[in-house]
Amino acid sequence: QKEVEQNSGPLSVPEGAIASLNCTYSDRGSQSFFWYRQYSGKSPELIMSIYSNGDKEDGRFTAQLNKASQYVSLLIRDSQPSDSATYLCAVLSGSARQLTFGSGTQLTVLP
Amino acid sequence: KAGVTQTPRYLIKTRGQQVTLSCSPISGHRSVSWYQQTPGQGLQFLFEYFSETQRNKGNFPGRFSGRQFSNSRSEMNVSTLELGDSALYLCASSPLPGTSGRDEQFFGPGTRLTVL
Image 1 (cartoon, each protein chain N blue to C red):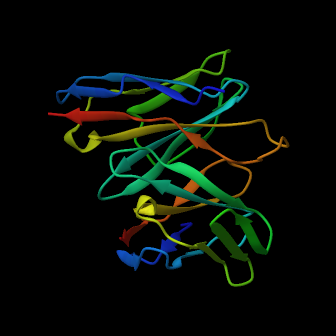
Image 2 (image 1 turned 180 degrees about the vertical axis):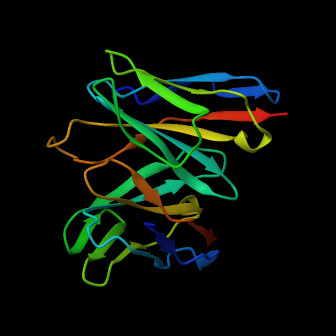
């Protein structure tokens, strides 16, 4: 069974700090990786996608992918209270467009 | 560009009833996927449709079914509702494979189903 594991948290960081979220996946054939942010009572919002090994930066967010280690991470720089949410790691496997999600990491940014 | 829309947003049903949920994808998107989200199981894949064909199905009983229309709008149906079907049902749409932003799925606001 294909699995996606996230550091369970919850994770608390002070405002302005770097938040680091981690994810590992079991399907070595996975090609597409995503981070979603979900506020309480809302639906998931796509914030980052990454397909190749290395880093991808978008504003305060940096996604990192290491396929050899089957590891994906998300760094949030200069964390803001508005970043407080649950962050979901998702992996797309094979030819099917089926996302497998981790259980999520709840992040709280303290003012 | 308008996002994914889902109707209704909230539903209350009783055990044994059936329910139909609707999803309209982002304009130009032709792939629609459905997910169930519960506190205990998290987000789980139900099925995916492309060009009116179900391409993949998750590990859910046959009570869960869906379809897609020629305009890419999709519906999912749950028959003989059980208490455990209470969940947030999410629809996600994707652009055509090979286009920019490949494989990205964008979620609608969801339908909150409560089974009493």
